[in-house]
Length: 340
Image 1: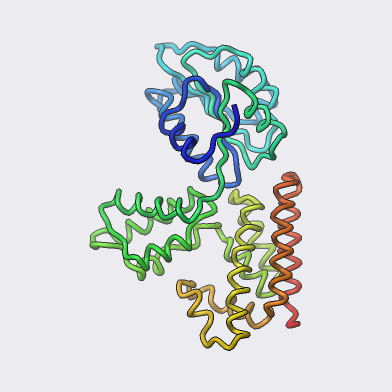
Image 2: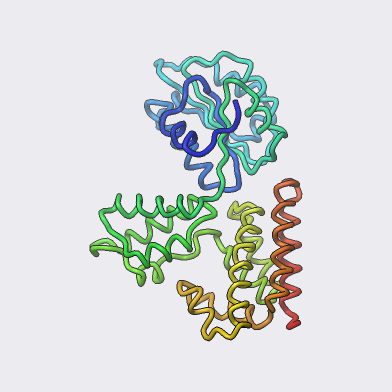
């Protein structure tokens, strides 16, 4: 089966098709991978807290014992009923274990596999995309439309409304990792509880940049010419599970914004930063202003091309993505120290 897309994904997550008992979830948004995996597991068993109904396995175990997955999948529950096996592959090669279970006949059992950002046409992703009984679900960073819907759903679920300017600012701050975005939204709705609606001041007071678990720290440090801070913040983001391609993508969006503001400055627009980025958090403003002083529009255009190429390479060479992303950001940080 080919990878599901768009509305097909939401429909499958809500009502998993029994014709595809093996589900692979992968992509750069680790939070969305986990959220969808959990939803599919809950829809596949009667009681997720029952250890006989839900078995959890990790990639390391399946590398050591590939037959364990097919053995578990073929086990009949002590009290009958539907069963699920939740596999967290991590960075381990579990292709032999999955190949074995693809050849098995599963009865009332679903296998849900969480993986990372897998390359097209290789390994586990290729195996599941070609298998008749498997569904492969890519999990990419939320679009602006997805984020707006997420904001509306969370706010409504907590009995609140949200002001238009607060909503716009919030959508700009979220993204990159669904789990982090949802955590920020829950923190915000808790803060605003008892008020008729969420206001812009609430967003400014409460919401960190959930998009990246320190992505802004990395990017602002790079363009402000602080390579030491880039290394520190990059390590934190990777330790938190943020994909290298997500980091580069966020940097590419930021350089496009800086380029537009710098063009306005060079055209004589007064207060261009405040006019074009009114939701910029006050803690970030000094670094962004430093970047705008150091970089000309021409140099920012070159950095944009550099980041676009790096983003493409992180997807082409997933095994080298971290090194590519870090090298590119450090190169920008070094360039950011120069005024010309």
